[in-house]
Amino acid sequence: MTTNAQIADHLKKISQLFTIKGDAWKASAFARGADSVIGEVEQVTKENVMKVDGVGKSLGATIVEFIDTGSSAKFDALAKEFDPSCLTMLVVKGIGPKTAHKFYTDVGIKNLEDLVAAWEAGKIDPRFNDAMKQALENKGARIIYHIAKGLAETIQAELVKSPDIQR
Image (cartoon, rainbow, N blue to C red; front, side, top):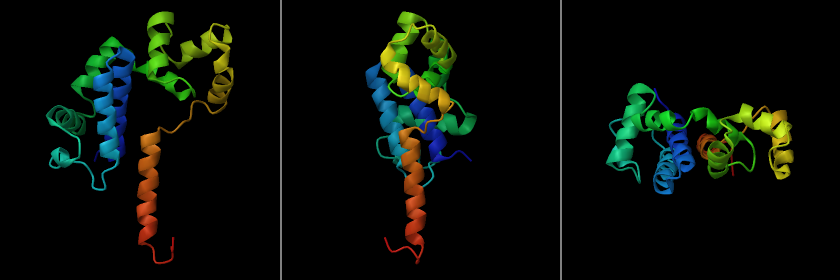
């Protein structure tokens, strides 16, 4: 069964790829969709996807396709334009989709490995030095906000049910 976190992560990746492409409107729509899915108390299914706040026909179809196949045509089309490995750069604090877009299109940095190589060669702005060191120390471990928020809300909901928890 596909979890809300998996659906939201897929939508967030599509959002990030649209941002790298330069399509802010679609990026925003998919980011809002990811937030809506992760905020759902019930598991999102093919049957109830259209009841999710902010999910229209197009976004709903993408979610259903992801539930059915584990991917979507939108993601696959974007993956043909931009190697999804470029999203690995986002683990570095201060590098968001717009900066990744700049690195990808202007500098030719395609992924985290290319970014590390460019940084080690001194080709990256020194303001990223601390963030690069931290990312390498953490081996890129960083939890995406909407996933962390969803996990925290799920844990909180379970804790509230316990008679031993007062606040």
